[in-house]
Image 1 (tube, rainbow, N blue to C red):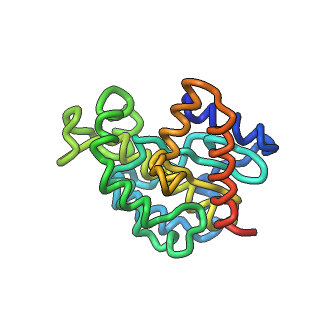
Image 2: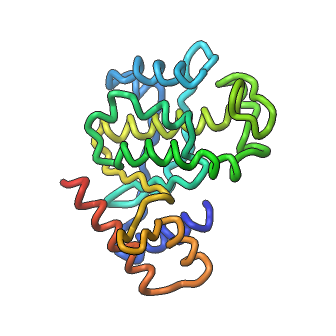
Length: 218
């Protein structure tokens, strides 16, 4: 768990949210609710090379009641994540603003590259097996980074599961604007809280989450 995620979790728990255990989707559970074909389509769109998609996403970022929260930092916004957002599963999507996420992917790929052009952020043995051997470090075109493709795929899998099963979930981006007047982003706000606890900034996090929860509805 990264520093921003720890601060966010502390803010949620401080607001009365409670930790809980939430099962993750599997290939079998996705097939059982009729989503196997769409998952396979996105897997291929992202360059998947296996006979079938391996569905083994990492744990939820913050599993709490009333909402599961996914916090997307810079490494989640690039052309591969953008490619998943054309799936029909996002036609009715209360989890996050799909149009805003498309803009984030278009506008912040350079930020993704700065934070994810080395080591396991670029490729791992497992991601290479799932999405093909990666290209040279820092070169997105061509073979590109298999780990970016894998991350985009698993973000999509989690979204698919949450939307299909009505799992109460919020997907937050570090690029989300939490104050229209100052254009303060969630990432900047959390970074300030990492450096120094501040009751006013924590209240700003709570206020933003309350607005997001209100958009999701019952």
